[in-house]
Image 1 (cartoon, rainbow, N blue to C red):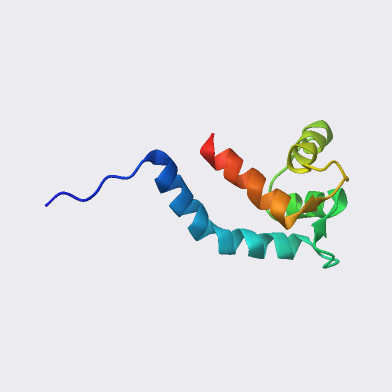
Image 2: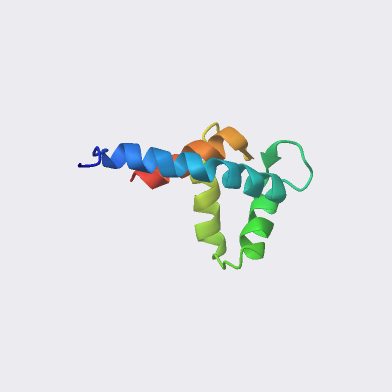
Length: 89
C-alpha cells in the first residue's frame, strides 16, 4: 500500500505548524519588556544570545525585512508571517 503523496507546500506548512509553538516561545523570550513587540535593541540581543554575529548593516536589513508595517518594531504576527515566507522560498 502506497502512502498518499503531499505537495512540497503541504509538507512545509506541516513543518511550520510544528515550529509555531517554538517560534512563539522564542519571540516571547526576545521580547524582554513583554510589550508584544520586538524592538531593534531586543532583536539584536536575541540574535547575540542565539550565538549569531551579524554586522550592523546586515542587521538593519533583517529588521526592515520583518517590519511589515514600518513602525520600527516587529510584532509576533510579523515575525511568524515572515518566517513562513522564508520557509516557502
